[in-house]
Image (cartoon, one colour):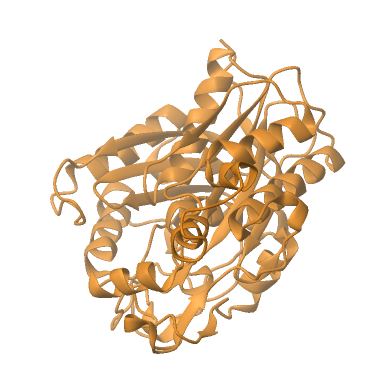
Length: 386
């Protein structure tokens, strides 16, 4: 079994900052949130809301919806990027699509605007298999293709699945895409009603992970893609390993005992062959909610020994739900390339190991944690390329 390090060979991104990975990096490096005010998206469908929403600038040839257009654009950019960096596709290229709710706007329009009547060809665009199949056809890839769903931890879960495919010899390479474009007025309202979504003020003021006065998270959208391979000449970063667990505790709350969260982190370290002391940065789930911040701060202090620095990019990108882990891994991977950690600026007293703004990167590993709604825990370890 080949267990050599899996590298992120190419990156593509569509976020609230705009279309393209460089646009994502420029936005993160600016320290300014991607969110802008959208009328009619606040609670009740009347108020304005601060949202990190993807613009309607996609290619109509990539589908009828922003969802399909963003998915294919991100994947295409990642594949092109990987080839420019020396990657050549193997015979068996698989595809993993990390997604929680696909085509939210498409189904909304199907029922409310089209009155459940469409041409069959247009109806098929709503199927989660359609953009994936179109992507496989575009490049002539014939490996396995499937969706992975673990709520906000879906991106980490797909990375771990990709590594398992490579370790088992099922594929030669994997194209990974994570897509979440679910910011309809109804979805925004329900996260506000849950007491975790905050859309009525500037995100840096509302979302303060590991700082005093945080009220929750701003809502975001993203489509992020990676080419994952062991055969790249110049990967951005290596994925050493990872682990997953489930709290089996509550529909929305994190188990305060941290039993399964801690186990997930320890298993991720073990699978990566590293010790807690080797972790330099914790790229946290960090949604700015009290329960998640409390749990992850305790992981930093007690499991990692309080030596690593911590940050979360959610104040900048928004909480991209099913694509959250992917956009946050992309931030870390691009940061390794730039030798900068894209931490948002702090606005209030907080954890002593919390980074404040764009920070020169020290040599070391990054632990990326994700705590998905319902108890999904996932952690991966990223390493710089030697």
